[in-house]
Length: 283
Image (cartoon, rainbow, N blue to C red; front, side, top):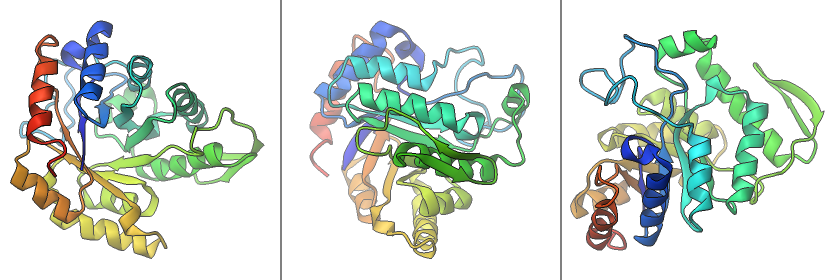
């Protein structure tokens, strides 16, 4: 099982020198990846319910900085050599896929093929309204955006005819180092599991308690789409025990992510080293 760090680009690690610390310490301690969150804007006093907390609110202050995930990952990638660089997640229906394809391929090239694009449909209705983006069609837009991205990355001369994106015989260079970029579908709902089965290279439900219900949904959707369900990586997270990790591995989980293990950048390398000694390589 691989291990990663989620929420890597917030808190103290917003600052450039601390972003380098978390990236280099993670790499030195054997972590496979770092994962970023994003919100381009956070509307004051939002009422949409954040789906990952009991009180329906994002952790922290509404004004807390959330750096652009792709820019932050590029900075960390420039200061590491092996660490994989993942969005966890990027809100795909808020992005233009033509521009995003170029941004991602460029970052992938600059970092030697280390980018993972984790995507979600979004939950903050007020954010979509403020950006002038459609809310009701965001799921359909996400599906079509994935197809458009893959066309731009994988076809020499790219053509895509879809519900939300249409282009014919266009060039988008550079291409990703390995011919494409893995797309990981985030979410802990059955629609997210079905999307991962149909379209994803991976699935990332943050709450491992949902896996027994969602993995069969993912696998059925993959089979229906003519895909190999065993080829879809499964990522989840939290704070583990060896027993819980072994149980997750038996379910098919291939990656486990933890939050930064210290809010103090000076103490982080030691905390990651202790975690690595306890868990990494033992599952």
